[in-house]
Length: 190
Image (tube, rainbow, N blue to C red; front, side, top):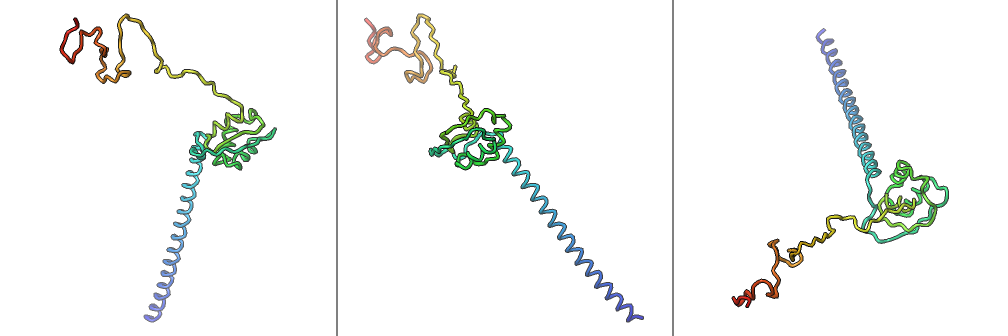
């Protein structure tokens, strides 16, 4: 009986070992699948964030370039076709971003067929303005801070910025006319 008990305990030991190894492999595979799912989720969020950022921001593919290419947009082109044409010309980085901008903004109907000179230094919105024929209203003087107002007070006032005086006070004319004479010699104005 002792022999039988030893034999049975060996068999139970092997089963336990198989269960332990099988359990380890099972949990290891489960952990690997969980890690892959988490990686896919993080990557998906990252890609979707970048796409959304590109759609709602305005940036150029290569702001430093000076190269201009000619792009022809045929009549009755859809937003998808226009995006592909501009992308194939090398002007934009992502054709889907341009397509989304055209569709979200409702510019599809406003696009005018024709031949356009475009550069990779142009931002998405500049390209849309160009192909839609929109022109920014340029104002002659938009900066009110630099406007000069002339007020006649009867006194001569000198600006410290024009003469280089850093004190901010009133500058005295150098000709010695009304200031009482030459200050270098100590003589008074006679």
